[in-house]
Image (cartoon, rainbow, N blue to C red; front, side):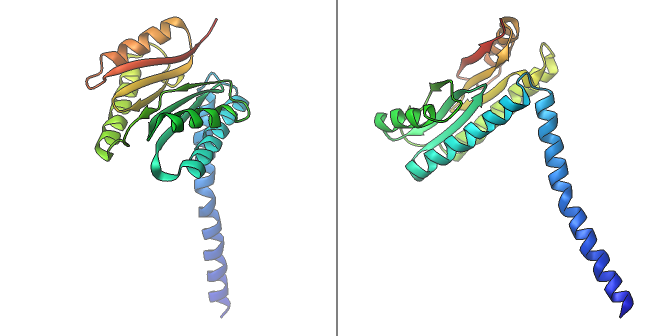
Length: 189
């Protein structure tokens, strides 16, 4: 009886310790991403909050009739995806602009049907190819530039020098499968 109580206590303790591992690892990964970013940790967190709030507001308002992606960098928000009509595109932009700490929006929503799963899979593949090229060419620190791909159009965001922006655009443009590159940079003076 005494042995089984000790065994149960040990199992309970181990289950509590292992439950902490994802939290610690996740926190370390987020901390690592912030450390390699030019944004302050406060700005990084504000950007994450903007993305979460905007995504929730849009989903609550539009439901699944639209496919909308929100990406924020230093309060500058990129809106990509597809909506059924021009009015929905305008309303979506206004919803995002109304969120606290949003400085500006770049509304790149397309009016039309939602992209297919294969198109989105290709977009994810293009994004990973471009990021891999950033690393292999080593012209700038790869996490200085955020890459968002929607329907083979690549959007580049970040707080960068003119040279870093030019290098990022060149790499993205020369990546097979990219239809167009759009700069959404904020430049370091």
